[in-house]
Length: 402
Image 1 (cartoon, rainbow, N blue to C red):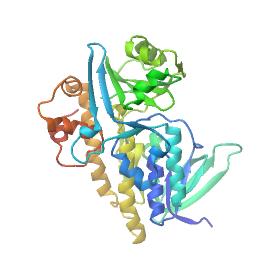
Image 2 (cartoon, one colour):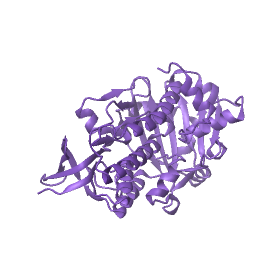
Image 3 (cartoon, rainbow, N blue to C red):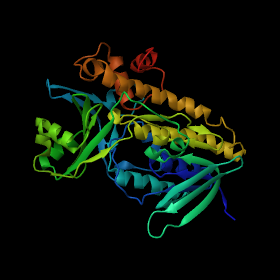
Image 4 (spheres, rainbow, N blue to C red):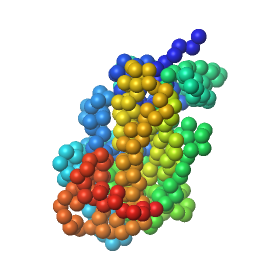
């Protein structure tokens, strides 16, 4: 007879590992299915300051790894020479003053190992092929991804879908709603062997560089060991290796930073910007990219993933203890909480592409009021669950954003 778990988590990325960790810390039986074997490569190396408190709860110390401290963000437009810097330590009171730039293979593996230390059981190399959410329990069937396929069946009182872009439950229910007004795809590569003086320059403050280009933007993320993650996101037109190569060739800054470095082959990702219109229900909830994925221009993904995982654990833990996990509206408070964060970033991203926000705020030499600039920095830091930010209030008050 299949043993009944308290919770099955699909996916061991940041959202899934965080949820498994917190639920296991609370004494619940947690089983995680992950299709890959960690460590594995993943894009999205730039973290945000609000994640520091989450990492402390999860028992992960990035300074001990070590990882590069990220002090803020720089926006540049080589077409006219404008350049501005936003330091996290200049945000509103209470906004943490730094974040980190991480190797995602290492970072995600650390999160998974922390979940295992907390007591979660993890089956790597297992792809979920069947999900059945019933009135009395959840049934999941997973298949091994190496060698002769072997199927494993598990049952639980509750299911957490943290399957990332695969958004398993949302696609099964045809509940994916795309955002078509943001970037449509990304193409990227990694540079290794940066010249020592360039590595020292980039590591001094560890800032992400956002370069504005026609109908899109580029990222430059420094990593320890003389590495640079570089990518291009476009809202229209072709997004392929040749597009990236053309932008690199036209940029004096990129040419200077990468001279003499070794470039990896270019890779592309799509599935940009969508939301799950059914993120929770009877005996299940979706978190991380399985609930919503937004254009990564402001690096909000992991901050939102952690917020979803923490909110889920706070609601689900007591419900499991009281046998209330089958309530269809159990995660309604989480949905409301997350909507504030999603909405703040959705509106910020929309204005990035479709208004004067880049010229009037992100590349502006001055802002009318210091507190307004502090508010911009706090949103850039993902400190979006507060009620004293005039910039965020402006974003949320607007009647139309798309």
